[in-house]
Each structure stands twice: as C-alpha cells, then as structure tokens.
Image 1 (cartoon, helix red, strand yellow):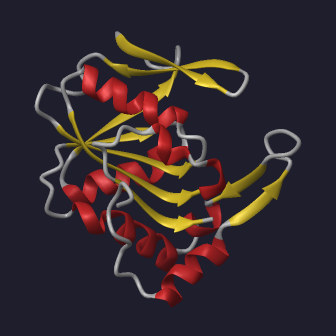
Image 2 (cartoon, helix red, strand yellow):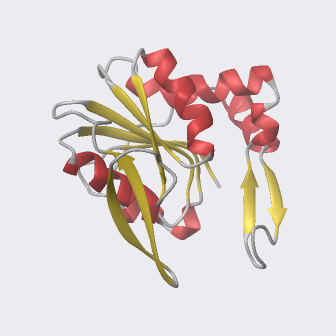
Image 3 (cartoon, rainbow, N blue to C red):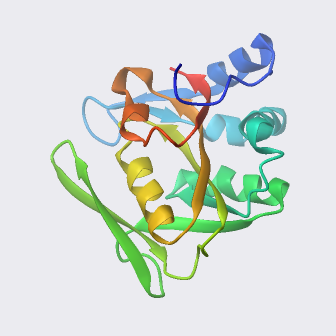
Length: 186
C-alpha cells in the first residue's frame, strides 16, 4: 500500500479546475526548471477555498495543535490551514532568517546542501503537527522539516501538499510512518 492518505472526495471537475489554474513558468528560477506557480489559485476566491478544503480533508479530526509551513509559499496556505484547524502556525525558514534561537537541519540537494531552521520553542513535546508546503518535488526540504519537528518532540500527523511532482519521487524521502496527502499529482 502506498504511503499516504486516500485522495480527497473533491469531484473531478474541481480537481481539474485547480490543475488548470496552476501556471507553469519555464526556466524559473533557473534554466531547465518548470516552476509550478500557484498564484492564480491564490487570486481566485473559489479556487483558493477548494484548495484549502482539499488540503484539510484528511486532517479535520486529527487534533492538530501546530501547522508547520515551509518557506515561503508554505506560509500562505499553511497559515490558512492553521486557522481552520484552530492550531498554531510555525514557520520553517532558510538559515539566518528567524530572529530568535533556532534548531537547524541540513539536508542534501542535488548539488550541495541547504539548511532550514525553526525557533527552539515553536514545537513542544507532544504537539500534533501537520507539515505543509505548496509543492513536494525532490522531498529534501520536507524530509528535513520532519526531522526538525521530531527533534523538538512533536508528532508528525501528516504532510499536506497542494502539488506533487510525481516524476521526482519526493515522497520516497519521507519516513514511512508519515502519511502524505497531495491534492494534485503532476
């Protein structure tokens, strides 16, 4: 059985509308990258509502206490998810961007490494955490975020992504015990 939650009950027309709104920007931020831009979804109230409802669906009854949003687009929908779940919101940012003491996690990129950070007091032992980012691509940042949350004593209830770039197989980098929910597979 594949790791993750079953697909949302959203009808195919709504899923197709979300998919059609995702803009592909070639060669951004560098040549060869086909960037998936969610801003058209954000700018359309009904599509934004559909995206939030679809991301929330598996987690409504999970007693989430914190939503962790990954820099930077994960902040937008992550904050909205936290509001709907009546949970706190925790930003995970690139190294040096947070103003207080941090926990850091370094992870491998295709060529080199990167580091993300979270405030040391953001997650308390026993917090039930939903991790969110707009896209899961290679999975490195999400994997590092899971490690950060678990080091702080949080229980990762799941990861929710609006888009999964299936060809990059990023979900394989996440631990088997972490359920993954994606709305759109591209």
